[in-house]
Length: 588
Image (tube, rainbow, N blue to C red; front, side):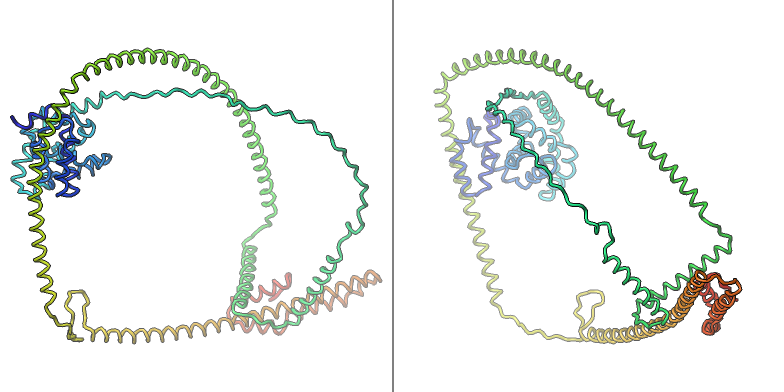
């Protein structure tokens, strides 16, 4: 009788048995065999034929590289969520499908697969018996270890031949997965109870406190409504400082300026000149007074503001209306929810009644099952004696096989130690040989490593010297350029200072003339208030004032400045300065 015929009543114990032996074998080769042989009776209940178990174990160990390729790929692709502790179980199923499927037959193989976890076996068989996987990467990976022709004829072609029948098995597993019914445990609903709290005592009414009478306040001091003396003192200091500044402008006191101040003041005068030019050009083009446009702009802004206020009021009313609608909708939703809750209570009561009837039926079936189990326990003693006899036979067979495997493993370890000892002796003999440590170096010779731009040490030194000379020359040129830029900047600052001094002298004369004119006007008003002379008596004063203005306009320094500036553009600028200082004065 073939050892495979004993697997019909084993179920899931056979692959789990081989998987447990593989786990112990991977831990330590020598001890695993003894330990596996000693623990077999406790792991299998009932156990399959011992010879077939050892044959399967030996096959899994012999073809471990081939099986690892498939199982590792399965864990990477489709088995990402599978437990790694069940890896040896997939190795056993892969070995049976690849090497023992012809001997076992489809019926026996289906029993072994269906006795295990259906979801895991369905996922693994769908991955392994995929035609694309078998004919592409599995075949290529196995061909790296064994001959490609041998792999194709003995392993790949038989697997492709079994593929249609295995596909039917995969469909059966999928149907069983689809028809699986999960029982949901119903938990009892917790009913809340009110806390037994002590009722607080009512608070005593406090006695009202008498309201204190306010004392008569003192009147506000008169100094509160008078301006402080410090403010008057600050106004006097401000006036004195302004007078000093006017005197200093008239006297043209020199002030020490740095480069930034000179450039800033020159830019200020330049900007004033450009603004005046732009103003004159706009007047020549026919510019008008912008007061009408500003009035129109103000009216349009007022209209926009009124329109915005009207829109805000409209939005406020719309929001109030939507709030009322939301309140009504909420009340309607509350009424609908009450009706739904009432229907839900009725459905729940009906379901609870059905559940109680179902529970009574299950209890009745459970009593019948207990009675059947009690009857089956009567023949337990005879079955236990047969089981012990069967286990002793398995232990004896496994012990003989494990001794043989242990002897072979010890011989292999001794052979490895002997080869390792010989290799160490050879290495020590090579290390004991003397060798020369001195190495002669030729500085003019190239190393010859094949790098681009490779050169000798002498050539490297010459190139470094040339680079240093070029760097020194570049530094000297940079230094000369910096000196030239510095001189140009100094010349620019001197020109700006000269221009600023001219502007200041003109402004100082303008301020002096303005002060003289204001004093003359004050004196004339004073004399007019005290004595009312004839209008002809004021003619000499008016002639004198006009003479002063004419003399200032035709001042020798201003004429020299205009003739000194050769270009027409600068002459126009000077004339604009005169018009800024004395608006209304004509200069030809």
